[in-house]
Image (cartoon, rainbow, N blue to C red):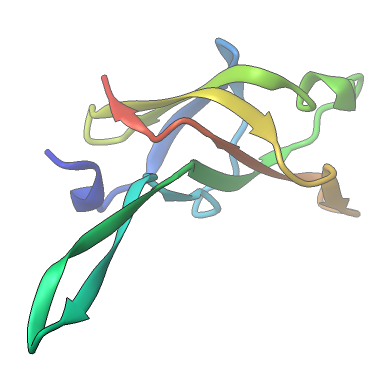
Length: 121
């Protein structure tokens, strides 16, 4: 199954191998890889240019008492996602891209990362 065909819920998410309590329905991602742009000339497409782009994701987790925010602020780490379909994918060399934010009183933390393009496991 290609990454772009996933249409399910995240069953589990791991930051550097540590499971996190993800809030249902909050996970979004872009697979990364390449963007392509057609180069036009002489009445048609002469070719394409490719630009490499990072994989990205954002999601919310439930904040637990005693959790240090520094756990989420890493670079060079990995994020692994397990879907309820049994499929798994991973982003390596991940880094936090925005300050950790949250909302009270629900205790959600909002996290955003970018890294190498997502790969299926």
